[in-house]
Length: 185
Image 1 (tube, rainbow, N blue to C red):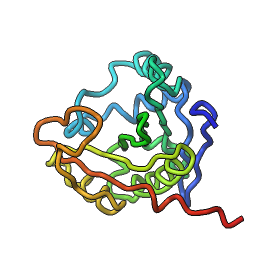
Image 2 (cartoon, rainbow, N blue to C red; image 1 turned 60 degrees about the vertical axis):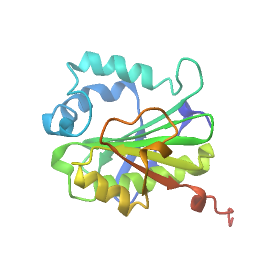
Image 3 (cartoon, rainbow, N blue to C red; image 1 turned 45 degrees about the horizontal axis):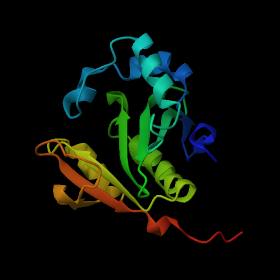
Image 4 (cartoon, one colour; image 1 turned 90 degrees about the vertical axis):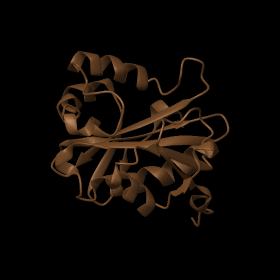
């Protein structure tokens, strides 16, 4: 199954929908809160049109040189509202970078934890990923707690295999091998 055919993922209370250009309008509002960018580079999207353009690129599912696989899901809560997204960039060595972003009104409600618990096993099984990495601003205590709760362990920045780490960022790693369980059916 290719990235463009990646399924929606269901959890107890959430639906993770593969990113599509059509999500740009409703995600523009979700991603417009300035506090989202307190710990991540950049700022809110400048317009829904700019977000549509970005989503058109990401929805291709691959980098232009075909070396990276891009997996992106919009997190939809039970009410139907878009709460944010989870994403992974998979590299040729079967490792990837993992990230999540939620609108502030969903912080502290378990939405990110539930969404990540749905996405990580799928990424490991469907795409053969053996390890995921996340880089985090050291002041982002909420995300650090979430990564730890998900089983990520802090490693030295020198152990990060996908390029440079922002100065002072903390690096976390998750072995995905526990997700490779033989199918009982």
